[in-house]
Length: 102
Ligand SMILES: N=c1c2ncn([C@@H]3O[C@H](COP(=O)(O)OP(=O)(O)OP(=O)(O)O)[C@@H](O)[C@H]3O)c2ncn1[C@@H]1O[C@H](COP(=O)(O)O)[C@@H](O)[C@H]1O
Image 1 (cartoon, helix red, strand yellow):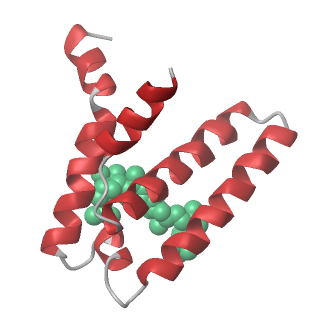
Image 2: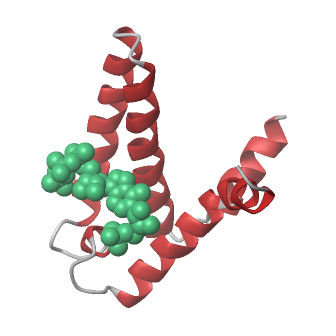
């Protein structure tokens, strides 16, 4: 992996969160993320997804399925980021909270 690719990987949470905020503000048609910010799906759908994905994380861990655990963790983190954006919080708020505990 090149240094550039490493840098992109390290910055992916910020890039993903910026995309989520953009979807929230622009609501482009055909975007799953945008649909979570509209009545089409909405806050309840996002909260349900977080519950579902957390359960899937637990099941993958219990099955010792490392690949599935990473995939379901990514789904969970993505939906958590959507929820933060829904509440006008940012990934920096999350980072600051984690840093305070470090
Ligand atoms: N990281 C994600 C991401 N992770 C998970 N998901 C979606 O979350 C849903 C997960 O639900 P499930 O696994 O239960 O699958 P599903 O049963 O098909 O979903 P539903 O029909 O129940 O909604 C799927 O629709 C996934 O596509 C994501 N959708 C989008 N992103 C990123 O968000 C950004 C914006 O993408 P758009 O949503 O296409 O604008 C892009 O950078 C994407 O990579």
